[in-house]
Image (cartoon, rainbow, N blue to C red; front, side, top):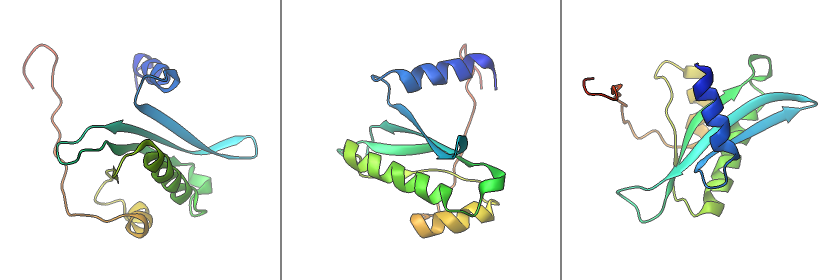
Length: 123
């Protein structure tokens, strides 16, 4: 990832006016997991919703409930912020993660499409 994106992301994390947030899971002195999430408006609700954009657990620490704890922490923070939904995406083939997610949320069958947009026209 370009350094400019990393720098901008950190700036957003540290700006209280931004809706982008981050959590880390720590074991001893080591970060073993992270979650990045943001709040945004919705066209189908009167309240904000929360998008869990990134969720990562260090490979050596997987299977210990770290992802579950991070997701549940995001649920608590969303609740405190007045958001009424938390949602996220994962690869269809990510069976290990999906086994965890299926215990914590409902898969509604949606498929995600994306298209990169160039700033000066075209796609």
